Image 1: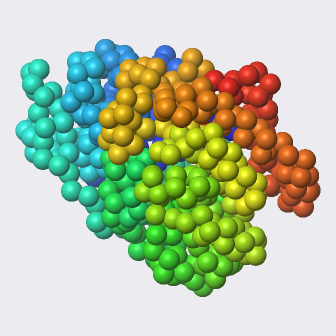
Image 2 (image 1 turned 180 degrees about the horizontal axis):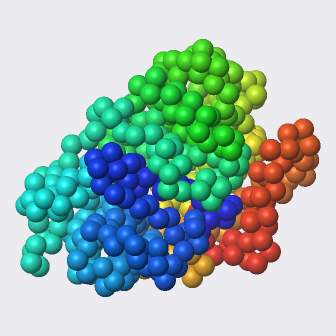
Image 3 (image 1 turned 180 degrees about the vertical axis):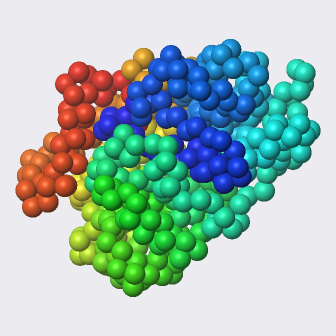
Length: 466
């Protein structure tokens, strides 16, 4: 559950589903949260499709709920092989298997080819030790297979948007900062930067940025424009789409050369120059999401952000000049954070004045340097992952530092979130934006409705999260 109503696509499950289908396997992709499915509805949908392999995406805060789902599915389909995927099982594969005998295996890291190879091995009766990347249970013994190599040629993968078209409904998904409806795709995997908190580069994809070819990326934009005409925007969910600026220029120039008319957004570093932002804007980029994380230099240094506050201000000016909307992100609870540094970060947020700003506590996930830092210093309130969710399903803050308690962090995030977005000048700007651009107004109203509902009910004060 999220504060602004955001619901992400199951990107990685979708890629794996597409790869398995291309290999000749019959696949059903069910997104129960998006489709509002309970277990009974899932069982009903699978009556005509009893699965041989059940693949469940999970995360640290949802791990116990998802294992319970795996167990129930295993009880209904006892001959199936249940496998968990995602950041949590990748970081703690053996621990994950020990949660229940209803879980048969874990796919570690990028699992597109792991699931394909697992399905092939089970279908042919081959030894499962041949499936690289699989950690599995063999008569009570945990077997750790050889690691799966990272996919270098990402052009080998199907367009994830084609998987969405076949299996999902694009109107089920919403990102508060994007035009609705939208789709989320990847132009590359991995990130060369070394932010100590970021889970996907450390646990799933690595710190090498592997990129699809420019032609392949632009062709998928053309596919969306042609075959998903209801889609208003495409989101590039790479950890850092602009890690290779020359490639960004090439993508933009090819979009313009092919006259592809579709809006898009992407995740970037707060160091882009005007020339790049202006070209992106010309090629259809409507918004960039920036993880500023802090407005204090010493805090940025402590999290290995390798960025300068003065670069952020220069970026903000360049983005405004280019007419680019910016969705900013600020974190609470990083090394060196105090009430004073956070107050300074809020002043930074007001000064840089993004179209929207996100404030959330530091979430430390197993497999990251941030988690090791928190464990080493006894900053975790609990290592019982069942307590990482609130009763409402929001991400719970479980970090206590000497300077800031978990309650302090959540309280400050909620205070800054409200103060920022309820400023009279901000409200007036958003109202004018909605009048000038009804699509932007619809986006704002949909997100604000969820946000204000949680504000009125007091639920903002009980958890952090996007």
